[in-house]
Length: 304
Length: 250
Image (cartoon, rainbow over all chains, first blue to last red):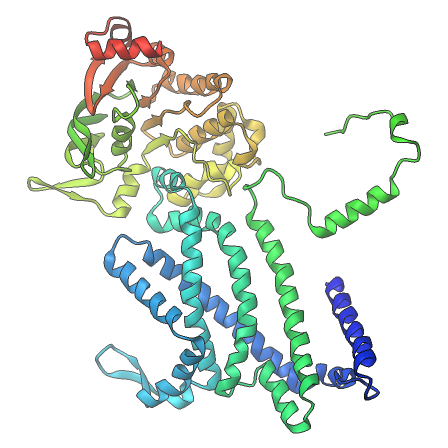
């Protein structure tokens, strides 16, 4: 983590120096790093971050859940089930997520003034006004989740079909049912294939949440824009938003690495060392470098 | 224990089993031999319903596998009911098919704990006993990929035995092994046979069939060509097809 912050700092310093040299100009340079620092930790920005993170987490959890269900349905021998999953993926992958967001926010309220919860085609037990139920945040979460589900479905399906058929047969031969086989045997092994693109999706989602600024959700991007429109400090606030996006994608990258390691259990005979372990190892070797030339060091069998 | 009457199976237009009649008694070790593509593995997989049969009848312990009779028609059982039947039949595969994401111990307890809902404590104890029995007591915490083929296959046998099956199916259990590892696996199977386990073994190990088998069945082209006492079938085959096959493999 420290490394990431150091890198960001180095980049920042470098850009400051660069802007001085090339642009000359104001005392601070055009990037106005002082302004960046001033707004980086202010309440509106931090509140925007909370919204962005909430949307990312909700959309990914819902997206993965929808994706797993759709992937299993698509692989079902029942044409009705696989067909409806195909239709879902076709629709949500075939329309822009921005359009879908507007549909959830404006479209639903326009089409249905009231949303009811009750017996299908019967009386509604509870009725909500769509404008109060589907707030901008809810519309954003729904739009991102349903869209993500379509993409996750294909990722999960790729993972499932990568698992050897012998695994399913072995599970069935000891009496496991279809769902049990999927949950206990196939999906854990499919995870190795599923995790890397899912990490990709999560990082992508963190940034895609900025689209909700168009449906009046005050996420990180919208929060920075709100400040920029009143103070006219456009570039510094874009940098504020960018620094935070970079910070969180960096955290996600590290997280992905360790999740991948976890699911690599049993796949390779020994796990490769983590970067930290490798660093520590190389430092130790540095200290233990033999003083005598190699030829004079007696060969010692490596102990088990 | 196992009764097959006129079992037919086709993959698309390819008829793999053309009417198999076979009886396996309790405690009997039946070895299925024959050239590749003769249908012996397919027949074995029909016994625990990994493959559906297209015609005839196949029963284990007096009950149809995967079907129930309603009037004079057969109906396929629900997934749950098929599972309950399969749980009573152990199966060992040519390619082991251990679960690579689980330790050896978890592989063996997977059946009892997840299928039979047995409590993990006693199941683990039992798994250790089974591992000891197949000579791998020290591999409890290893993962399948850290084991040799022969060791993996013995774990696979232990995994099947953990379900206390009344019948064990072996699908070419030594065909994917290095020659020097075959012996360990055959030893475990031999001791199982000595204890009276009912076994159906698809194998190319003619020596094992002769020594351990109570019956040898020679299959070719989807039919049973010849069956009987191992010594009779293997040393004095009645059919030309059996003779030419044995001449090649012996």
